[in-house]
Length: 487
Ligand SMILES: Cc1cc2nc3c(=O)[nH]c(=O)nc-3n(C[C@H](O)[C@H](O)[C@H](O)COP(=O)(O)OP(=O)(O)OC[C@H]3O[C@@H](n4cnc5c(N)ncnc54)[C@H](O)[C@@H]3O)c2cc1C
Image (cartoon, rainbow, N blue to C red; front, side, top):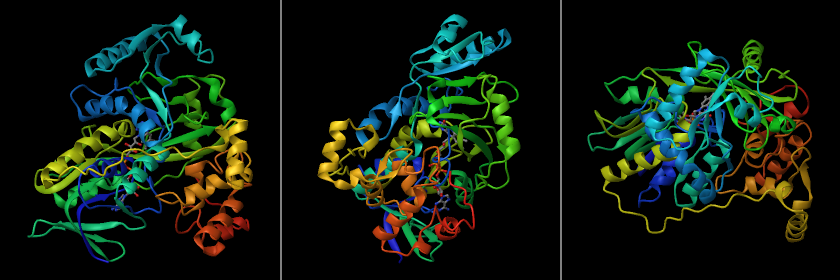
């Protein structure tokens, strides 16, 4: 069905979802169009989940500005809209005296970028903080404001709060092309054959944002897709390191990080491989072997055991290395969030605030007095005290029906995910929202149960239930005929 809106946001990753929420502070009719089956189908799902302090970007760049602002906003936002965040701090480790000058340079850059809590620490303090660190380490940059976040949960939080403030989300629909009409409206042609006419467009299409930009502007952008592979280790390994452990960047790259995740797992990666296909998220033994090898520089005892899943993400690396943010000079009403690679997750809240303000100003929008910026984090059975668990079961007996044995996820939590403001409609959608299938067995026991609940709640047949989109139907997979990827 063709429709006319004030603003169309292309892409429901963290940047599109955060911008949609910021836009809902104004009296505007807003639609987010997402090609995938769910929120965060691109880099916002497959990244390190680090809230970078902001000492790394070159001073004066968009990256420096938005990273520092975003990192400052995230702790409060986590409480306001309900997503998981932990302020664990980070260390950039020098493994030889030759690397110390570079670490000092980063400390100075941190000061120039206005990052609080950045200092240089010596070997004694470093090894006291991290006893499992390579004994060769001689010094480190310590950043007290860095943290870890659940990147999918952060995107869900932005999107659900936007939805409860009136933003419409359209999934499974790709923006195929767009052009500006003589009436000044942008006319978007969608993959379902319908059209959206919009006064303003926010281009938050991740690795595809460059193509969309180049289709409307004579000022062409260049960015190439760069893949990064990871290993995720079980929660047993989470306490190996307290901080996010970076290696000192050198001519060969930024090195491999080893970090606890906000959920208490340990993540190792990413490598950096330029790829032709922006949607290529396959992992390969050779890449993962390189990740393990390089991680040993930080953690010599790493033996590749306790890995529960591996995955890859692709980021769009801009030719000049910086984000492209704002209205495109020769395309009035078209706003870019492009070349948005790392630290895009950390920067998204600040970028969203600026882009939404630019759009509102261009459209002369009035504030929305009904805006409610609060969203509760859905309750988690595993984290309740025994008394709270008993009370939860008394109020809703489905809290007493455990679906995922590894993560102790109850049926009530699966149902909450399926009936959320932006509902989970696939097995992986449920997994990412409430962690059913996130444990050591990676859904071996609970995925059939989740598929049955989806069938029942969506009123569909088992052969219509998908792991995460077309081609991932669960029926042949449950019969053991195929094996789907499921990061
Ligand atoms: C390996 C890796 C590690 C990273 N680590 C970190 C980190 O630790 N900290 C940090 O701050 N940042 C990190 N980043 C960067 C961060 O993940 C990204 O900057 C951020 O997630 C980008 O968000 P986005 O919403 O712009 O894009 P995406 O998350 O890619 O979302 C874009 C969305 O647009 C949709 N889409 C694309 N084309 C169309 C179309 N034509 N029509 C409709 N929808 C469309 C896609 O399906 C997708 O859902 C990392 C990135 C990678 C890949």
